Length: 403
Ligand SMILES: [Zn+2]
Image 1 (cartoon, protein in one colour):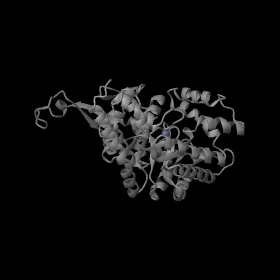
Image 2 (cartoon, helix red, strand yellow):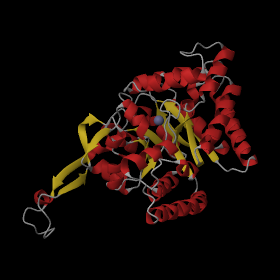
Image 3 (cartoon, rainbow, N blue to C red):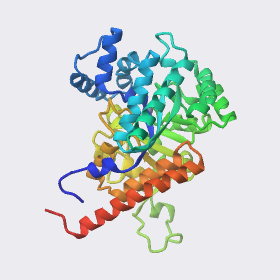
């Protein structure tokens, strides 16, 4: 492994982004520019100051505060041309992060303040994504970006939004999500919308197990029939630690095993998520900012303490427990992050290398809301670069690059 902390090789690895908010990934300069045009007052005047303000406000350790930062990004995403521009730029951002396949999510109902219909908003985003993909293709790159349409948990438009998500499948809408305040607004409140998308076999990923716990995850699985969980990190509430001695007091089931050896037992919901390969869209930096994940020490997640440092985040514990973990940025602007940065922090804090990043990316491909053929194509296209990176890492280790 390199000792110079040069992570440019990580930036070049092909990646898949499953949990990436359109309104959380704007360029600060774009926010400043559009705000100037429409007369929206911002908390800072320059792009640099604004970037710092977003990072600071998002560090407030509360999901509600974190969501407040979206007032400003949403304000500049109300005209069709602005939505189109932001979507186009998002594709360029993804490409710069090495993303080859992305699903960008956003909630049309939050983009009607200046008179757009939700239909017009979805079409504008589709146009922008198309512009961005075309630009990357013209420059010799390759990225495919689809949309996930979110309904807001605190509002009552979810059925209407679900109907639009199904209607706009033909222009790249591949999934449905519920976003906004999770606590107090379980998936069960949106039963009609969730039934509608299920009846039309539109895949569902739900924010769950982020700002609320196991009950919300259960509702996402039962009411939402979710195939992926947005974050889902509080699934650790369904972990029970016991010992060999407790399960097998007479030493008959596991002869010779140390009775003090700890064993992880998963509850029904956690077993379902693990065994059915429900993808966890894990976004560590975001979780650290909103107190969403329990702190892990000595391999065990706490039930009281929040993870406040990267090292305490349960991402490695979830992988070790067998969950299908995929790494996403959540909100690139608010969390000043990217998948490249998350991978680099996984390398620094957990010693992850190219083989780990390959597995995390394969998990993301498996969970992607695309056809089996598209997944196979994606897998084939990412295999070469990861194999090379794994070989380069092994060679560097053998060559004793240690000084
Ligand atoms: Zn999210």
